[in-house]
Length: 334
Ligand code: HEC
Image 1 (cartoon, rainbow, N blue to C red):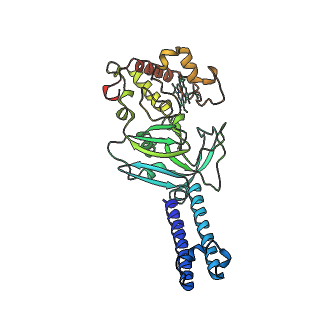
Image 2: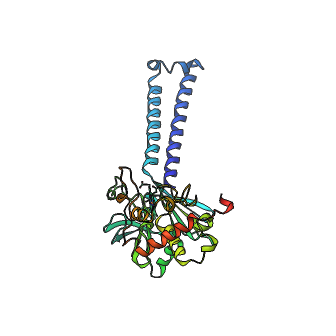
Image 3: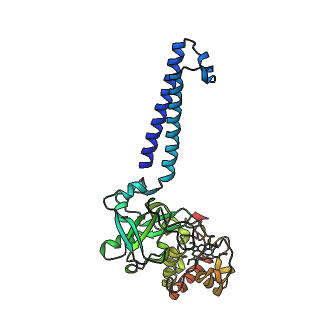
């Protein structure tokens, strides 16, 4: 919003500058009484009277300053789009840092940095004010690199009664954050962090960084029916638990049978399910440590150790993936 306001001011300035230029030229042409031929004289710069030359120069400088200013304003003002309840709002870094509810927050064990970090942060629920409706039960957090977490809204709301509290950390351009481990860039400009994540079992993939948008949405199975278990397996509690694990750990990067919004990794169901061409041991190895199976410089997936993804959850996840390999895709999404 602030970026737009600055842009509007810059453009008005440019418009005023252009108008001054026209007035200067027309005034001079009238005085000379030479009508249209006066315009061709612009090229003969030294023929112009001194006051006109000065005005033209001043106008040009003003226009250049205005244009450069607007480009810079656009470049240095990252914005986060929050959508829900039928409307969309944009929040710039400056607007977020200036809020009254922005605090200094110490995160004891930051999931992305792997250590204690201090941020300027806004309570996430306050930012979602006015965006919630009855149907949306999921917060879709989209990052610049295609990572798209589907965070259950209950996890965020649970922060008001003893659970982990979600915050939007905002990178102050005057005090930039360090680069992420093994990365060139920081987690900014916008990063979803949790205070006391252990209280609600927040997963490592529920800390999306380099955010571009937050969108209130219906649950993944509502939006993508092909992620739902086949009818015969609906009451299988292990497969059901595996689906939950898949949604929080894998869906941010991988689609399954075309369902999902993640764009970093391949679809794990189509055209052939990963469970059909990888052995059980190979699949487990990729999930635990992809580098143990194969390595190359552009490798993006990071593994999940037994502390992040307990052995029982990994077992359930594989049950879900196998159940989905045989799943007939609903006609509506074929
Ligand atoms: C941060 C993003 C990310 C997350 C989270 C993630 N993956 Fe991946 N995964 C990738 C990318 C990217 C690839 C492609 C290879 C690479 O660049 O590492 C990949 C490759 C794979 C492959 C190999 C596919 C093939 O045919 O080569 C499998 C299997 C896989 N992931 C399974 C999973 C499972 C299961 C989960 C959840 C426990 C998961 N991944 C979580 C990004 C991710």
